[in-house]
Length: 209
Image (cartoon, rainbow, N blue to C red):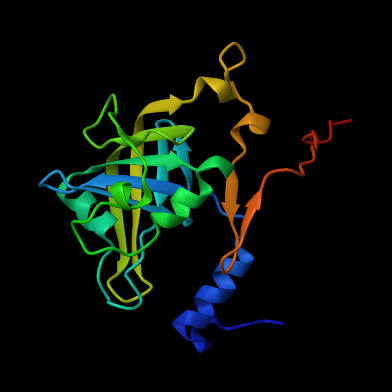
């Protein structure tokens, strides 16, 4: 079956996208407005973009209900820094709480009951309860459009990394997956754990005879 995405409503396209692109990592993004107010929100349109320099990208959409920019994007336009806090099984419930749409200026840190911890390279704090945090400065913002469901891709250069000692093998520079216990986003209200993995070695190219 071949589908034409332009023949669907935005809601139908969204449903197809989040059902196909799974599992998605979650960027639990903390930001700060010009007055110093803090915001915290999860985004699953997120990935690494490069490693030289280490760069991440996440995509805050224009709100489908109000047609407004997300508070996260507005804050980044005022203070071009953010922290990608990483979620796991232990922080899943408070991360979900922070997804609640609050009036602008009301902090999701307080609403979700999580602790702002000072960052080392930027002004925006990380979430103390998060097992990993990337402190980022904005590298560029690519605007898709200003329509509901549109939005922007925010690229950030990682300036500092926090990792909980309990999940990190410093000798091997290796994050311990079984202790990290990350989660991923599925469609609807679905999430997934990383509890069933398998390994496949890269196949070398054939040698010339």
